[in-house]
Amino acid sequence: LKLRAGSLEILGVASEPPDEGLSRYAFFARPTAGRAESFTVTIVLNSGAKVSKQASPEASLRAGPHLAGTSWYVSPLLGPPRTDVVKVLIGDGEFEVKH
Image 1 (cartoon, rainbow, N blue to C red):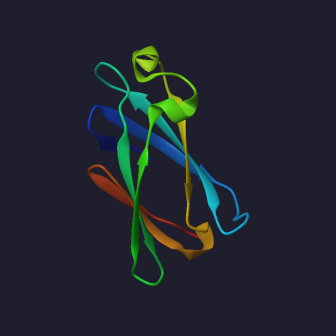
Image 2 (image 1 turned 90 degrees about the vertical axis):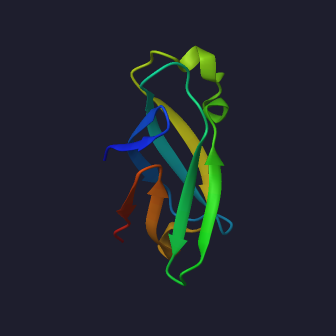
Image 3 (image 1 turned 120 degrees about the vertical axis):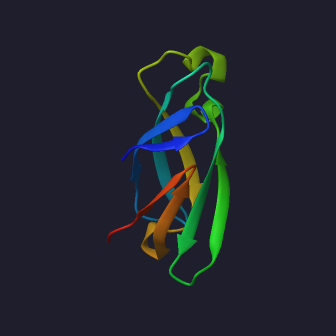
C-alpha cells in the first residue's frame, strides 16, 4: 500500500476485530517533507454510509515535529467494526477491505 495524504505517504494499515462495537486501526505513515501532519481517513461501510475521522500524529505519543525525518510511525484510530467496512479512502487513493 502506498497512498499520498498531503506531505505523508501511507505505507500500510492493520486492524483488530471489534471490541465493544469499535475496531482499532493502525496506519503506518512516513513524512515525505517536513513534519508529520494529521490526515483524513474515510471509512465506507457495507451499508453505503461513510465515516470520516482524523488520524493525528500526536496519537502516536510523539508530537508532529519530532516525527520529521523518521522512516515511519504508527497513527492509531478507533473506528467502526472492520467487519462492516468495504473500502477506506485516504488522500489520493483508496483500498478495498477483504474479509
